[in-house]
Length: 382
Image (cartoon, rainbow, N blue to C red; front, side, top):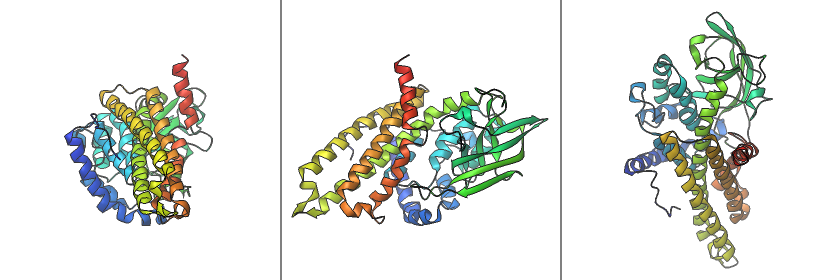
């Protein structure tokens, strides 16, 4: 359901979109059901995505990327959402984790890790959330104590996307535990280091094909050269990257909304009740018309935010708005569109049921809707 031109994107982006759709049809959709049963995707799809140039496409060519702008990342993320392909954690890897190194890493760090990330040979995760620290990053307890040329890290993380498959983690730590309001530092942690261990691949309400894990760190030694930015800069780095991360979530939500409404329109044209197509009931047409209008308006705003990200003008408040309205629209559409399916919508053999379960996370992950409202209100009441 696309009724408006999208001036944010040009012909090159649309050609790229066509290539992404072909990749999803051949390399993701046929295997997604099996990945949901296994609780994670096959590493081979990461290598194939890398070989096709879909990972870290905005990284400079010298570091294995295409030197493209963020709009190419957005196209890939949106099309994954449109297809309901929630298994591969590509957005966490490319749109989020890679930005920590590209924006704040040293040249040596970029040369060491980004080419392998772009090739799909090194899978990245972000280690922020802890059992007692979700949206409140300052409450984290994972520590990194300086010992000569190393940091000794102790603590744990939870709800980590790509946690079972990751080769490196952008790990948020407290390097100044005595400072309750600061002292946060990001360190690149390799998963093969002694003292690193993975916990359970967590059983979730939705996103069944995406591995989400607990991670543990016990007297793990990591060289100081793995630190991202200066010691104590972690909160500044997180706030800088969170705007783009939340935009990526909004972009994926737009794709999911398109997939949901397209499927529902097709279903209501085929299914009959009381001697007529479900699509012929005024209630059906009016509700879908309302959702379609809301989707188009939200898409215009999210596209505008993508343009701001390209020029470096995206701020935290605007990104929070995009994440909140797009994410909540996805949940609303999944809920209301499932209703048109009747009992079929409750059956897992129908894709709408998967999208319904996958959509609930949009009001939680990346900062809850309540936190987004707090961020927005601070700006409005300043």
